Length: 481
Image (cartoon, rainbow, N blue to C red; front, side, top):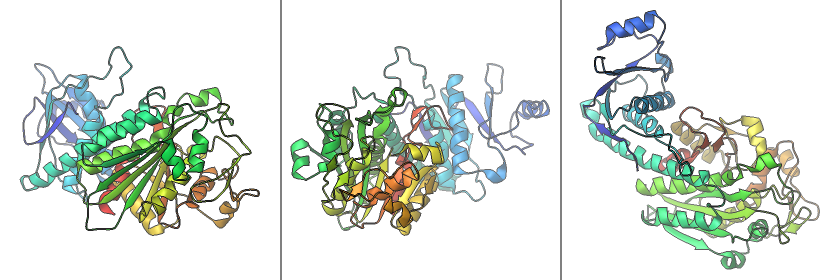
């Protein structure tokens, strides 16, 4: 999977020297470092690198970690991501770093953050490029660690490898254009990736979806010639427990907006509207590879939202698996309709004890939170706190939004039970509260990843395009819940 192998031990042709902004003394290349500091060529900012690699050089890379008191797992990920890119730039094949014990940071997690940053630097989606731009060169990276931490660190590195595989899978699924990543192809990829790891994968076709009474999901799918797919993935990691966590991902493999059509420029990246489903598949892969002792169900209602003579229209009143009727005020508020049936299935058929849904649901979330924080709505503060803890561990920030009853009034229907939009104001909140109507009072958190799942440019170690957010959060939630 990876060109790079991260090993515990010593070796490597290049030595990495770690410095803070206030560092004065190094155990190597002191003369070079003094010169760089004096000339202000190198200041030690987080992720700053200076390479002295040549036949007559010190064969070192000086890596800045920023201010000592601000060191964190996330800053280490970002710094070592930059290092990984620098190693590729100089075509280095092996390198070594001595990992110190940073105050207030778990030593094992420190090494895991370092490993993650390095592995993140290898990602590229270049399937359709005739000439590849990113060419990983590093074959071995050695972590010179405290001797008594060897077993724990090696186990942590193995876990990070599993987690990054899940992240990269999620990114690849999202980055595929819609002409390739259809609902049928998404279901096929889920089966191929997960069944070999012991995940039970069932794929339901249109007839079965109709038998289940998923009228809202079917309404959205009607405009496409490609059939919808309902994907259920089960990891039974603890047969002695009846606890079940359901991860429900939005699976719109393409969204034109339907008859409430999007502007042309806004449609270009709408192959990414299945970011929620991709994150569920990626998380399920990481969970299964790490053999977590938990029971987790992944659920995806996959379809396209297109225009045809069969497509649903604004003004329609449609049904749902829950028996609630929905006024269609916008066919571009389609994701919540597919999720409504998927959530009801999770709560009543699978009888999950806790439900997380993940969706690129609203442009309003991007307006409110940009590309940094994922928006969240919940009906259970205890579960919300666990999601927040998982997100902090993952380095994937989540911001909880309010859920006052006044917002609920905005989605009440007149000729139907509910409206599928609550107007422009508080759009992320009303979309989330619409979904709450379909969780059957099960503890639930909604994650709106519209701003965090897909980027127009690089941000830290996250690439342009699909980011894989929030695979890490889902993994850590499943592990710690």
